[in-house]
Amino acid sequence: MSGRHVKDYEPIIGRRKVDQLYRLADGLRHLRFVNVNSTRTGGGVAEILTQLVPLFNSLELRARWEVAEGTPEFFDVTKRMHNGLQGQQVPFTERDTDCYRGVNTYNRKLLDLEAEVVIIHDPQPAALIEARRAEQVWIWRCHIDLSHPLRKVWRFVRRYVINFDATIFSLPAFVQRLPIPQFMIAPSIDPLSDKNVELPEGEIEETLDTLGIPHDKPLLLQVSRFDRFKDPIGVIRAYQMVKKNIDCRLILAGGPATDDPEGEAVLSEVMDRAAGDSDIHVLLLPPDSNRTINALQRAADIILQKSIKEGFGLTVAEAMWKGKPVVGGAAGGITLQIRDGHNGFLVHSVEGAAYRVRYLLHRPELRQRMGEVARESVREHFLLTRNLRDYLTLTYALLNPGTDVVNLQA
Amino acid sequence: MAPVEQPHIPLACSFHFYESVSLVRLTGLRAKTLDELATLLADVDHEVIFHHMHQYFLKETAEAPDYPNDFAQWAAESLEDRVLAERLANVDPFEYESLEEVREALMAIIDEHLDAMPYPRPVLPGKEFFFNQTFSIVVPTGLDAMTLSQFRDELAQVDDSSIYYHVLEARLRLHKKGDDFSQWLEDCLGMTDLAERIRRIDPYFTTLNDLRSEILALVDEYMAMEL
Image (cartoon, each protein chain N blue to C red):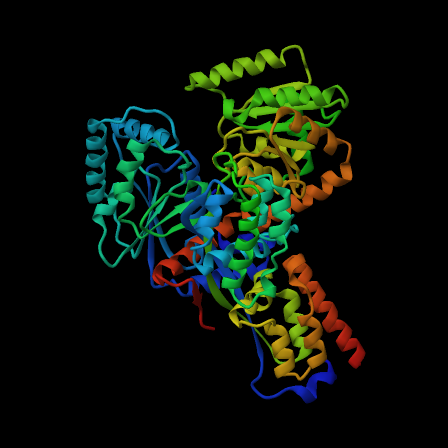
């Protein structure tokens, strides 16, 4: 997983793009970078740091990753802050803010923030900004959907955020009114991770065998949690509409809903709806099933991501990277990844999803062509190396405030 | 190396290929209706207009966009107003001498549309127009050409962003209807005819890679003729 070198990506992005990263890094070697988040494992932020920090170092840049500590009460508070910032109604009291400040004060003493560029990920360690020294550059990287934050939580976090030099959001829709520069960096996938790496044909068929899925007719797939916003019921309804005309199978692959009562309810509705149809395969995969999901995506003929609400929806980029056309709900970051009719289809209803799936099932050549375009879109915009390049570019932007163009010398 | 170009090479007149690396800067301004778009568009910085009139060229190298600028795309996708989208799509930034003129052309279309339909409906949440701009870094590629055949070989291998920088961005940077390639071919190699043919390529309806192919084809044709 970790410890990759930027040169490992050369067969995928080409020598020129790798050289470009070196040229960008050349002007930043005098700097030290430190990233801070609040967990070493689990979750998207830890995953991206596990991938990115070694790549920084492989460019001979000095980058580190510090993990803030916290008490169970702190993580309960920050979980509620996270949900509140994503627009959910949550309790948020003075006791919560005291706890948040207290743990951040403790972390200020604990963590080594000695670097010229400090990148703080998400709200948990945002109050560390109080440790800032004048000559440092501090960046707040927000990975969450801030399009409709609960005001009381955002106002509290905002007080810290305005003391940073810049913020990064994943989508333009997450932008806020802030007195500091705001940049957009889209998330990315790692083409060399288990989830995305090329698989031998044998492994794909073996995975289907192990899961008891016959490969005898076209396969439709949606990979997502059993969550209403991902609309798994809508996906089954779309499949049922398609099935009237074209025989096919549907695979719904998600995780077991162990600690989420809402997830359990959705799963049970899915099971009811799928009952009696042996061509619907509902898979409850353990969290480390990256290679299995990879194989399913490669086996599928068409991949759906029929979300009604979505943060970024990186599963779309993962599917597109495997050369599959995706039929995706026109929500959140999905609209940034799918260019309707070019590299997939954007849909607004169950009927729309059914129509586009039928349309594609009838056109194997178009499916192939769209899939190829989809893969190229991801190569261009959603790979880890682009994310790395964006961080380097951002550093130049912050070292040259007030300018729109920086000319590097030969 | 093609012998044809030897007589034309002035000393120390080589072409330096650069690339452009960019990052989207968010302004925090957003419009829910066409009316709000018009109000904000009237005052935003030129860099914002540049970004929304040009970013498709950078973004869509894998596939050609339906509409070649963000204003037209938003009118089509979010306002679902195809008439407005088509009219905005016709504003070709390369026909104008300055970004202020581009702004005026856009505003004229929007104002006329608003006068005809004075009660614009708001878009759905999340579909607002977000005003952004570009921060960019110009990076030397280390590739320099002294001759036409060197130029041809290097043009074939540079990053798409190099084509963007030398052809599209150059027009605004140099404030004229030209590009770095044709200027160099004319000034340093004296190839006025080839330069003129490259200058005549319409960059508005092509991807960067297609643009590269078109230029390469013209260069190849020229070299074949000279041989």
